[in-house]
Image 1: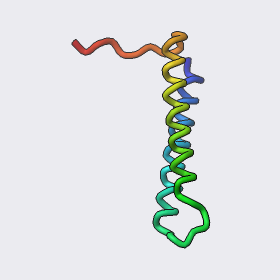
Image 2: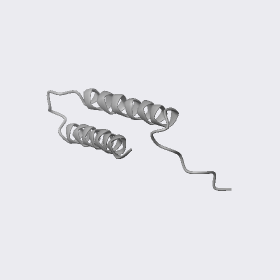
Image 3: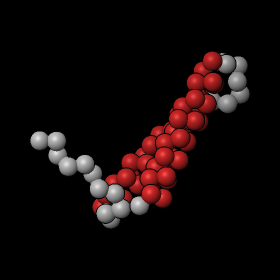
Length: 69
């Protein structure tokens, strides 16, 4: 059960790194690399993380918290 959670954390770290890379491009407008490249990666990693969370819940690898009421 914990390897799937480590995978979630690793993908989340990739999302944050991509966000900060886009921020560094925004601070340096003369850079050759487009900021949309890093934003696109961030979107891809976010979609991948969401799909993995849904699949892990469907297969019973993780369980959501019970209802608060």
